[in-house]
Amino acid sequence: MEKGTQQVNQQQPESPDSVPPISLNHDQRGANDVGGSNDTRGKSSISLRKIESNRRNSQRSPGPKTAAGKKRASMNAIKHGFFSKFLLVQHADGKESQREYDDFYADVRKHYQPADWLEELWVEKIAVWSWRLRRLIRCESGQIARALAGYSYEIHQSKAGDLAEPECASLSSPEMDAITDHLFLPEKEELEKLLRYEAMINRQLNHAIAELERLQARRNRGPAPV
Image (cartoon, rainbow, N blue to C red; front, top):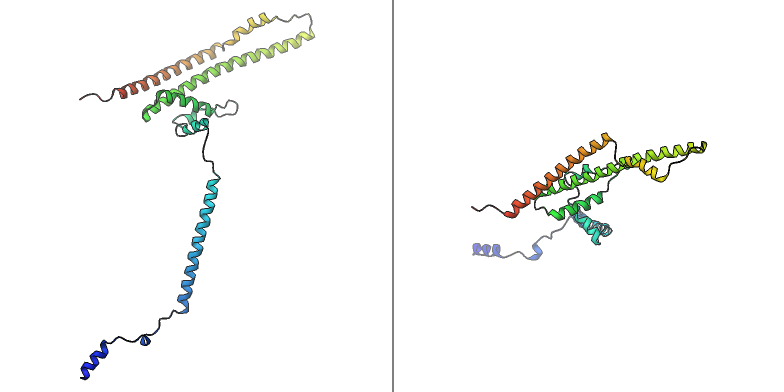
């Protein structure tokens, strides 16, 4: 009987009063309190950063809205091509317009509609050599303008001398035109240099056009039948 009574007593669960209470010491409570405050401060700082970021983004430009602005923006991917960075004259005295070149390049590209990077390369070469031909014409005009300006300075100097000597008659307008006609071409050496440069540009331009058209013709024919 004693053994059976001992076994029954061992199987009975202990009463709640007999279980010692679980208590947290001061260090543990402090750690939990600190952790909770850190989480709160972390969430608050993240929210403030998001608000500040949204405020900055709202102040940025949403992009072009007009048709002209959208056209220029559409050229952002191709206006800095293989050669344009070094092609345009950036000096203040003869600075060339990046926008004007971009518009010209866009027209050439729209005409040929390149399908891959190789066709794109030949399209840009066409634009580059055409731009150089335009610059050559401007150079010729500049040389003529310089010659006329020099001659005009000489005329003003001679008129100043005529005032000191009234007996010297000034030339009439037709005579002046006849004298200045020869100035509408550069000097022989400069003219030969311009003509050689123009011939080289035309060869390169025609070569670029022929290569691009050959590539596009082969692409349009498709693969050869087996």
